[in-house]
Length: 223
Length: 270
Ligand SMILES: Nc1ncnc2c1ncn2[C@@H]1O[C@H](COP(=O)(O)OP(=O)(O)OP(=O)(O)O)[C@@H](O)[C@H]1O
Ligand SMILES: [Mg+2]
Image 1 (cartoon, protein in one colour):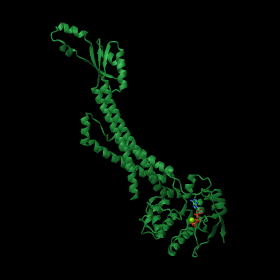
Image 2 (image 1 turned 45 degrees about the horizontal axis):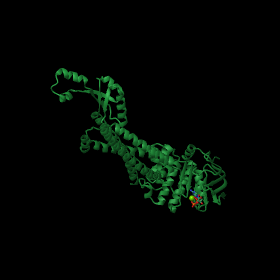
Image 3 (image 1 turned 135 degrees about the vertical axis):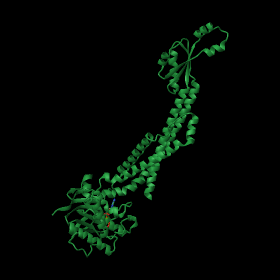
Image 4 (image 1 turned 90 degrees about the vertical axis):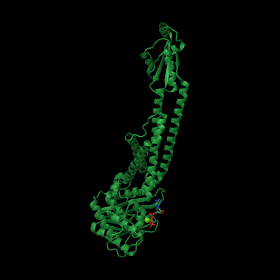
């Protein structure tokens, strides 16, 4: 099976050189549905940052989609990122764009033509139950609504890998279920690889999944 | 709302730069026009023992544009009306010759000195009257005027540029969020900064058009035209094609430069 993510003796730290992730080894296969748990401040978001190339490996190697991220060229990283969909913990929506345009962003970057973009965005707005708000700006939405926009944006371009940082952190049970259904659908219909950081794994989840736990800078798989 | 404010601050900054540049150009043109007028009124008088040909005089210094011989009749008339015509002719021959030299442009004091020296090297020339005292004062006044305008324009430029640098940080902040997010979804640098460049070029266009309107208005204002005609000079204050294009090129260059500074200064956050 294809390995979408492969970490070997991977260490991560910020500019202050404090080690957050310490020499970890793990791999994630194509089509895997992975939950990552861990205490607040344990380094879950940090690990995701390294997977989308915002934080370079301090030591060891990290290969994502066949691309070694240690010392990766900017152009190659951009290419890789165009095939990843990310839901950020702080959403990172573009404030001066309508939510419709925010969801379009990955489609614009990937150069899809207007009609495909339009129909894809309408479909996603319906899926996250925001089709009546498409003309609003992010700051006119509730936190949970913004989070659903972020999810729609991450799904827009049918990426091969979705990284979601607490995608249901601000949602009620009903909306959370919406999100889990969308992620399950992406896995089962498009074989998308999915990595979700969460504080607890939903009991209702309907797919086989792996569970990694981060503690004291190491990662181990929970069975 | 906030974005309109950002637009305005760049437009106003560009406009004030264009304004000070054009004011400097107008002042420079006025001074040139005034110098030409002075050159037309200014002349050097040469007294020579013998008749000199125009060619000889013109060959003495390149700055001389024309030579006129001053008729001695008036002088003779004043001497004595009773001199016989034959003696008058004789007297005319012995009288020194007077020549009025017109210059091509309004000379600097140094150029006047040089001209005087050159003229006196000719052994026939006995005296040169260059009216250098009056000339000196006028010339210094012109220089002072030009200096004041230059200082004014430069200080306006400096203040505007300082303001722009202060604003630059805010613009950088406003654009960095979008550029960052686009980068996280793999947008290449040109696409990330496309909006920024488009905005700044639009701002440059708006500023240039505003400058056009301002100067078209100023150059047709009778109040200002009256001032110029009082001084006796004719100056084109704003050429709607050349000057406009010049200002447009400056505005676009500046705004592209600013946008590039923002793009170069953008650091991907971790
Ligand atoms: N930009 C940064 N610069 C320096 N240190 C950072 C930065 N971001 C995070 N850290 C540190 O790295 C550690 C891990 O942070 P991280 O955001 O990965 O935690 P997390 O597991 O996602 O926590 P949470 O569940 O609260 O989101 C923390 O100690 C934090 O202080
Ligand atoms: Mg986190």
